[in-house]
Length: 198
Image (cartoon, rainbow, N blue to C red; front, side, top):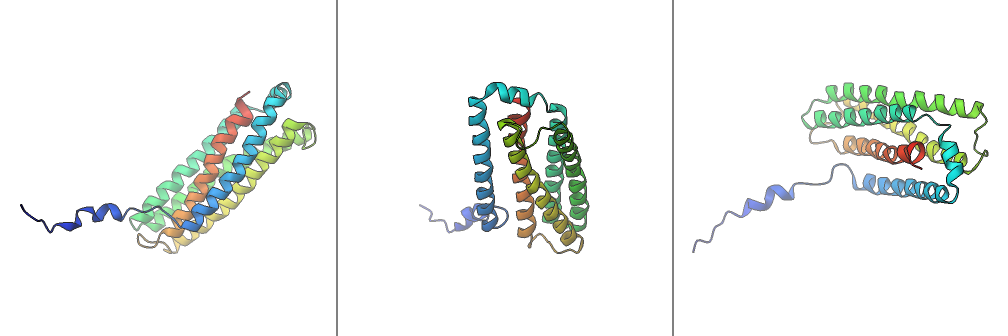
């Protein structure tokens, strides 16, 4: 009947915590709720006007949407690698990875601006029909978030280059990259909904 005093068996598990700040998690959940409302509105309207949505979708190029998806997901992967570099006190390497993440995301930005220009010149503007009203609202809402996310990544890269993040002080880095992952997640849902399904 040995009463063991080896109590610290549970201690390592207790140190596991969510990355980033709680405030950022709350902000991300609020943003995801807004995206969800847009997605529900698009889905419900598509059920009401299936022919209109099929015709509208035919004016979009799925290969362009796929290329934008690859650009954003590659950017998210590079940003995740940057967080891992900070966790082992290699902030300068993290800065380089974040710059690469920004460059990858610019593929999305350039292609989306090209798509917007093409659609506007063809007359498919916000008032053309319900499909294009929702197309512009949903994708512009996401596009603005991408721009904000790029500013966040640029700030994180600057902080990393100045060694502003370390393994023991990385909450801001994790929070910023989590926001970028939220933008990726939203696009992964928007892309098939707008360009493929129907």
